[in-house]
Length: 352
Image (cartoon, rainbow, N blue to C red):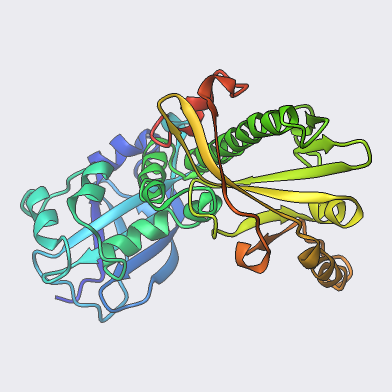
């Protein structure tokens, strides 16, 4: 059949959005609609959606002549605004049309009552298959959580990245948006940075005791926006140290701010890269490599200075392969050294 409209169960919609229970016969909402179908790009529409007495009708949603066969599954995520749950209204609809032959079709069919509407648990969906990135189900999931991986891809390893769609879908379920997931990932990024700085604090203490430096200070502990994280002192020189930490490999790109670039241009400065950062048996551990970035700094600042008038660039990404690094030095320190009572919880991607 050539389906031209989709009806969603009114009672289920009111359960998801209690605010729809008021003015149920007249309220109309403008919502964006995204549809993912086998062998087709994303289909986007924006339309007024009305909750009628009998159903919530998405009139003319599917583009003709899209053929939807009896038994096909419509995997649907309703998006909401940022209001408290009791007042939240729908703002968007994202749909995957899953047909015979598509990955997950039989599993999804088993979850639906005959010609019925079922609410599917996000974790159950994510765990059901190793989803094909090209299939309609994963394209829907990726669309809903797009941008989240990019927030922390440089500081996480591959295993952690697999958790991010789960965070995004949970955030949508609880709040109607991915805002909660963004806030969580921002806290994870900050915790990884603090863990790396703590490891370098212990390493600098060891180097000071061995005579490599006379003294040092943890600048970022007092001023988180300073262009260096540490300063190490000898009689004749002061070395600025910027720490870049990742749970992944040394070769992951890292961001460096324009303020850090200008500091590196004007004074002795090194980047200390902490890679494979992890916690084992109540210890922080990681591999540390050092580099003087000035060979790249001057050219980067020249490039930034040619930006059009009125355009500012606050940071750029450096690929580690573009710099000369020292040999790796293994570092470790007690977890108790981290100056935060909540650090372990902030590091836990699964913690709410």
